[in-house]
Length: 384
Image (cartoon, rainbow, N blue to C red):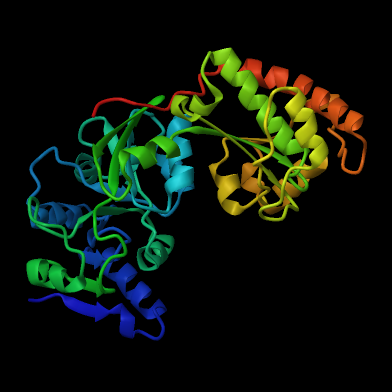
C-alpha cells in the first residue's frame, strides 16, 4: 500500500494537516516531514513499535542512533539536565535550525530514562543522545501538539542520497511509510550539521549546512555592552574591555575572536549606523583606542539570544531588557552591580566623558577577574 501524499502548497488551512499528522504518529504510523535541511521520516518516541519500524525502513545497523526531535531548547534540557554552557550556547543560537547536538546521556534525571528500552536503544545506544529542533513550520506545529518527542532520521535508505523533495521521498519510500507531507524542495537541500559537545569542547561529526568556520563563530563566548544610544558609554566599555582582556591574555585585540571571545555593544534606543560621539572618540584616543569607525546598532532579538553576558550601564537598561526578553535574566547584569549606574555623559564636556570612562574601567575590573577565572574560552574544536 502506497503512502498518502499531501501537498502542503495547495492547502489553504494547514491546521487540518497538522492534526492528521499528530493522529498518525499517535497511531504508530511513519510520517515524512519537510524540514529546512532534507526530508525526514518520523515516528513517535512514545511508540516503540513505530520506532522499530523506522529503523527497519532505514536499514540501520544496531548501534546507529536516530535523532530525537524536540519542540524547544527548554525541552532539550529535560533530556540533558546538566547541559554544558557551550551546549546551551549552541542550542540558544542555532535552534530552531540545521544543527544536531550530540550530548552526554548520563544524568539520572534525564527524560531519556523514561523512554521505552527499544526507543532508548534507538536514540541513545552508547551514552550520548542526539537532539534537534527543526525549524520548518509544519514539524514545529506537530511537535507542539504531540505528547512527546519524535524519533527522526533522513527520509532515505541508509547509504542512499538524501531526499530534498517530496517526490524523491515518494519514489524511494512511498511503499514503506504511511504519510508524506510534500512542501517542494527543502530550503537548504543538505543535511544538518552534527556536532558532538563534551563539556567545553565541540567536534563536527558530519558537516552539513553549517561549516566549521560558522560553528567556530557560533561557539564563541559573546559579551554585549548595552546603553541607550550606543554612541558613547557602551562603545567605550567595549573598547576598554577588548584592550584589557587582550592584555590579560597576551594576545592582539584583533585576535580575540580566534581565542573564542566576541565583544560587541548596542543600545536599547539606538539608531542603526550612528557614529560615536566626538567626545567619546577623543577620550578613547587618549587611551590609544579608536572609536572612529564605530557604528551604532539597536538591541535586537538576535543580539540578546546570542549574548552569553549582557552588561548594562544602568539598572533601567537591565529592566528594559527583561521587560522584552525575560529569558535573559540570568545573563543580564548591571555593569557596576551594587556600586551604582554609569550616568549618560551626553551633552557634557570632554572631562565628563573622561570621568565616565574611568568609572566604566573600574567597574570592568571584577568582571575581567571573573572571566579570567572562568574558562570562557571553552569553545575549542577537537578533531578534524
